Length: 463
Image 1: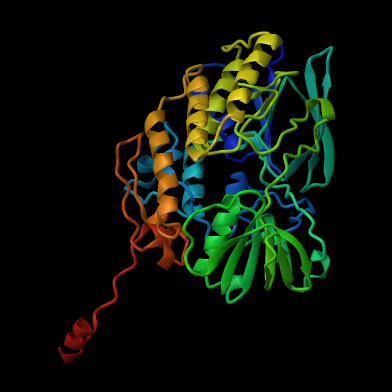
Image 2: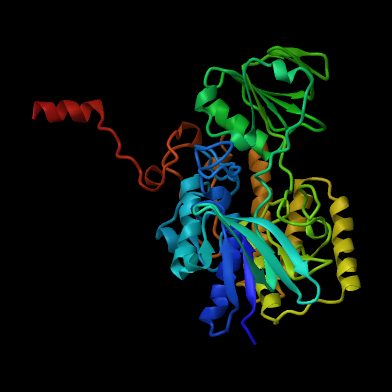
C-alpha cells in the first residue's frame, strides 16, 4: 500500500507545531506519513513573520500578517513556553517575561531549526480549492505556486488547516466616514506608531489590539488616544492622554459623534474591530463557521471537524494559551493520523462538543476564560504524549497578568514570572518598557553600556 499523505495549510505556529509533532514521533523510531506543508509567505512563522507591507504582497496575494513595529508580547512568555524547548535552552540565560516580536520569532525558529522540518514546506504556495472524494476518502488540494505562476493539484488522506484567523479584517461602516479627511485603517494594516506622533487618534474597538495599539501610540507620542467601545469598556486605569468613550454613531468630516452625545475632532482612525474566520479554499460543507471564541462549534476536542474528522483545524480558538496549546492540539492530531488515537462515533463527539459549548456560554470574566481554556488543555493533553506542564501554575500567572494590567497598563510588562518548565525566574529587562524604544533582538539581549558620568569623563581628561 502507498504511504498515507498529509497536507498542512500554513506554516505559522500551528502548522509548525504539527510538523514538530510528527518529527517528535519520527525521532522515537515511528514511521510517519508523507507530509507536505504549504505556506503562502516566503518564510515560516505566520503572524510572527513581520512584513512592512500592507494590502498585497510580492505576488499580489492579500497580506497575511498583522504584526507591527515595536510589538512586544502582551502576556508573560512563561504562559506560552514550549514544554519540550525552554527559553533557557534557546537563549542560554534568563530573559525578561515580556520579549519583543523579534525575540519570540527567534525562539519559535530555534525549535524548528533544530529539527530540520523546512524540507517539508513549500513556500510561496497558496491553497486555492479543496474537494473530498467520498469513494476514495481523499482530499484533492488545488494549489498556486506563486513564484513560478503554476497551478497544480495533489491528493491527501488528511488535511490540516493551520492558516490562522487574524488576517481577514472585520471592517464596519460608520455614516460619514467616507468623508473623513485623515487616515482610516484597520489594525491589520497598522505597521507602527511613529506615523501617529502628535496626532489626535481614534481607535474603534475594545479588544486586545485596541488596548495594545492605543498604548503603543501613547508611548510613541500621540497627542491623545480615544478608544470607542460597542458594549463594554476595557476598563483599566488609563493614563492622561488615553480615554474611553462609547461607540461612534457617525462622522462629520474630521468630527466623530459618540453615542453619549459628545463630539471630538481626530486626525486618524484605526479600526480595532477584529477579524473574520475565512477559508476561501474550502467548500461550504467543510468550512468552519465561527466567530472568535474559546470553543468553536463543530470541532471535536477543538480540533476534528465533526462532519469529516479527516479535516483537522488547529489554533482556531480565541487564545489565552498560544504556542503550548497549539502543541497539545498538534500532538493529538498526529496520534489520530497515525492511528494511535481513535475517535468515538459522531453522536458521541457531538455530545462532547455540546458540553463545552454550554460551559462557554456561562463564562463571565477573564478569570473564567482562563479556567475554561486551562481545563480544555487538560482535557486534550492527557490523550497524547506531549510533555506535561504545570497548567495550574500557568493559569495563576494568567490571572496575575490580568490583575497587573488593571493595576497599571503602562508598567505591567516590567513584571517578571517564573518558568514552569525550568523553574528559572525571569530577569528584569535593562530598560523600563515605557522608556524602551528599540525592539531589536540585539538591544533586548545585551544591556547597553552605561554612559560615563561627567566626573569620570573629567578625571579621564585630567589624566
